[in-house]
Image (cartoon, rainbow, N blue to C red):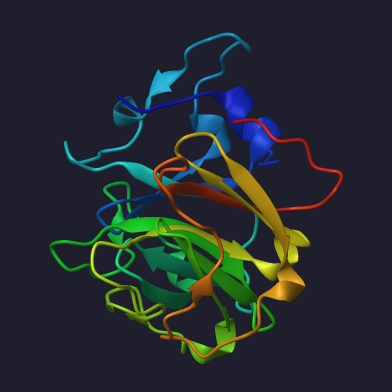
Length: 228
């Protein structure tokens, strides 16, 4: 069962009680709450089950949470799916979300939405897969489409591979990549050349029996502290 705690929102997402919290799910839907609609809880509290706040389907899971104070026509919401499909939609398309939620992206039956970022025309996108492949491309390679569209190929994946994370060049100066057996490495962003959207990418992490598959990626700086 997924839970959410008000301290988590205040500390990690840097919101105020007047922010809109946009919840994106694995099924490609988006729900919205005002931050003050989430019950207050102490620092050590377990939190409130998200199904008690949002009208989620039984198999639906929250995969991204975006705080928005004001909807900006110059900003986009950039989405990526497990199968490497990407989609860019104007933030204004999400300014009026019903209580029951709205479709944010049209998904194939074997796919799911895994991450969403706020972008602008100057953003560069990094996609990383569980087999340690990364691609970097410009946001402008993806034209903006409406909420009900499916999106386009962001990365051409090999059999059995899938996207595990998306980061932006503005979030740090290096990529921290971590595998399921607890190993990790950090690589400067300038070591990744910009490619065209839809390419196969390049090797960024050597996956072995010792490392296990890649499970996480974050853009970081030297000043960041990491919790795993």
